[in-house]
Amino acid sequence: MLEFIDKYLPGFLDNLPLLPPQASTVAGDVDLLTLVWTLISFAVGTLIVVVMIYLAVRYRRRAVNEVGGAEVHAPMVEIVSMLIPFIISMGMFVWGTKVFVDLKRPPADAVEYFAFGKQWMWKFQHPNGLREINNFTIPVDTPIKVTMTSEDVIHSFFIPAFRVKQDVVPGRYTTVWFEATQTGQFRQLCAEYCGSEHSLMGGIVTVLEQDEYQAWLNGEQFERTTTPSSSGEQLFTSLACSTCHLSGDSNRGPALHGLPGSEVQLASGETVIADDAYLRESILEPRAKLRQGYVPLMPTFEGQVSEEQLHDLIAFIKTIEPESSSREGSVQVAESNQTPGVSNAGGGGR
Image (cartoon, rainbow, N blue to C red; front, side, top):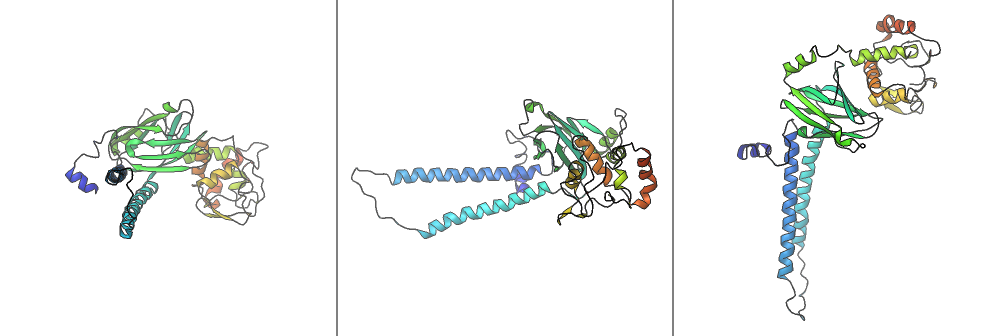
């Protein structure tokens, strides 16, 4: 249907009043679905009102003593009047489900960025560690996956021109993806009331050509930043996590190489997947999901590390190699930087 509208009504969806430009691969599908639903609702509502007025006039009482005729049953009329709306509703449901799934499943080759919501600003982190505040610069024609969390209250990440919106919730990770099809600058808003300055919590998404984006990343206007995994490694060492989690013969905490994405057996008998949410919870609340075979020695790091630092730690954990290739590197560095009193700060139970 999109092709039909583009052919016979060129620019119709782009020029609808009150709609921002269609600047992503999913914008056209979302607009078309919304337009069809609006037209169906308008048509059905108009039909109901017209029939109601017609019946009210046609069968009105014309005399005070007039008595209505016998009721006539029309089973086919009743069946058809239920069947047609059912078929239309199911068709729209299937269509809407397809659009929803397309919006929620990023492509396998999507580039992952991170966003942190905080009263009243947005902080974005690029794969190379570069950070921006209230500005989000991305390349055109590239699938972008944004993993988000909040540092305080519920926010909502909304880019009207891309037709994407996703709640950003404290204590958990949510994701949204899009692929920009136009270069330029587009508004990015918070669509969830989050306090007295909610209306000011927004930013600009700048879409650049591929070569311009690479030149921008390498620009001299930025201080050289470390990657999230490098920052996470430094934090991992400073917190003495390596004492318990990088030594293969340690019985205080499980080794972390190969952990992300694997199945974890818990002391309760349950099995969970070690995704980002599990790793985050394990750092902040080590006793929440106790690993089978380990005692709860690890202290909580809630309030000691920020959401950005949590992201960096998780990024580093994903890069940890088996002991044979990492022991002479990270372990020795970690042991040389330990301070008294924190020898088992990273150990136990996870």
